[in-house]
Every structure is written in structure tokens, then in C-alpha cells.
Amino acid sequence: MRHDVTDDDTATALGSGDVPVLATPRLIAWLEAATVRAAAPYTGPDRTTVGTAVRIEHLRATHVGGQVEVTAEPPSGDGRRLTFAVRAVDGSGALVASGEIDRAVVDRRRFLGRSADAAAGD
Image (tube, rainbow, N blue to C red; front, top):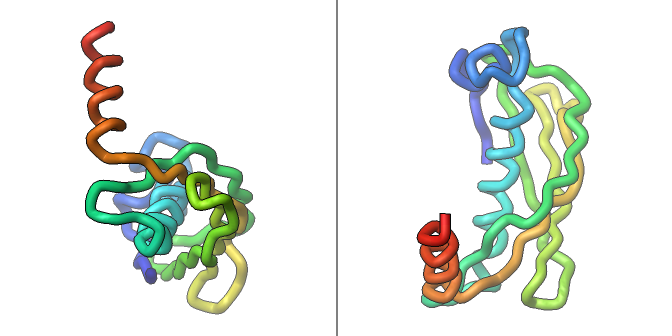
């Protein structure tokens, strides 16, 4: 998945810093989206995945106008818990970020039912 960095993607815009470069939260969102796509073969019509852990090192700044390509390697795990190796590289091929993202395979209805029950208890 390739993304162009815009003003809306910066640390300044997202409130995660005060410099106009790619914000770590946006980068993590892009990496998570790559894991959702990579997890598709492990889900079915009634199953989905939810994020459970993020371990990312954001190593290099990317300025507005730059490009970032994110990838998620096929997961390791037991079928219910999936761990993806993720990477982001810029348009010059330099490593922007790397790490791991964990996702859990869940039954969509049961998960949403528990979420609704938890919200009702607030």
C-alpha cells in the first residue's frame, strides 16, 4: 500500500507533535490497514480481526509530498492470534519504520455483543 504524505498526515495536524512531517499515529494507522488486508485469508464471513498490540519503531521523518509504502508480512501465530512483521519505506527506499503488529481473530457478532455490553455498563 503506497501513501502520499499530505498536510493532514503531519504531527502538527494530528496533535502528536509540532513539526510538519509524517505523524507516528498516521503511520501506525497505515501499517494496521496493511495487516487487516494481510489477515483476510485467516477470516471468513462471520470472522474478523482486531488489533491487540503495536510495537513500531518510527526511524525516519517523511516530509509532506513524500511517499511511504507499507507492507505486512504473512503472519506467524496459532490461527487465533496473528503477529505481522511490518515495514514502511519512503520513495527513495529508505526504511521509515519497522516492527510488529498483533491481531486476534474473533467472531464478529460475539465481539460486537461484548462491546455493546461493556458500553451499557458505563
